[in-house]
Image 1 (tube, rainbow, N blue to C red):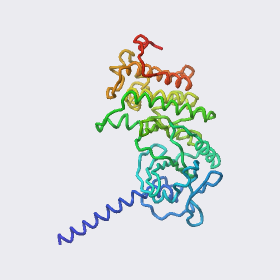
Image 2 (image 1 turned 60 degrees about the vertical axis):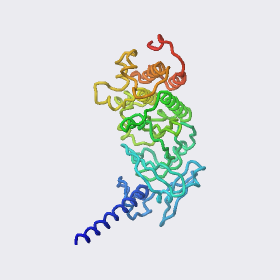
Image 3 (image 1 turned 135 degrees about the vertical axis):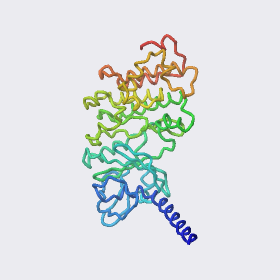
Image 4 (image 1 turned 45 degrees about the vertical axis):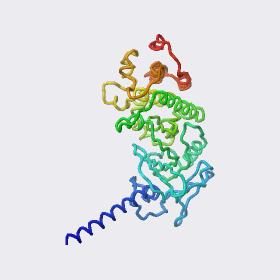
Length: 378
């Protein structure tokens, strides 16, 4: 009797493991083939779904997909060079794993059977514009081309949720490298690499401002988890240019720790909103401290905390002690921190504009800085 029970238990465990393995590949299926417009959960079980509830986005942007039933489920490609590499059916067959989930989006890594590994990002709070306006904005995003921006490859339109398809960046985000590596005993980013990252982010934002001048906040969602790192540790910005299509009622809840004071207090977005976020990001890179840790304390922001400490004490009390330094690191970190504080001026009129901030950042070089200049207020 005991032997029979053991055999049955073994069979059940094997079946359960097999089901779990199959389930991991159904995440994208559940996202794409969710038939209920009111159901905002990811259907991992891949239950039977009717394609009649899937919205079809057709137009001048090239679409490819698979016809099932009476209607087609299609991806709308914004880059011709990738439109022949995969289609929606490939995503439906792909094995997938959850990368992360935020207040208005979830990300999945999808390994295509015969093609690249991509990221599927699911947005649920993106009904601020109608389909035509949404499509036109996706077209604008698809035209962007810069080494410090993660390109949008394709998107999928449905009334209550949208999918964005991008390349998968294996190295992960800056947030993980700054705050996650210490916990597992891995080597922290050294100072030359951090300076390179700041300069790359500056170039990416500058490009967005040039190519999307009609947007008040061309990035609008700048934070360390939206800065990916290439194999050579070059920064790659993601989640940019989405302010026009995000639901306005959810916008105040997004990345509060990087929001400018005029936005938090008055709901006002200006051309210098991104500048504030960039300043906080720079201080996060220099100090290694997560900005959210200052929300619950007495200081309003990471910038306020830094301002409360004399520059002469920054080396001992402020800068990340886990990063490897060079002979000129201290002077460069002080200079960059002062630029960041200029980006985080509470007075919008006195705050650096993006062009000036980028210009000053690019001037920070691997050279010797005079000690008198190092601690001056300028």
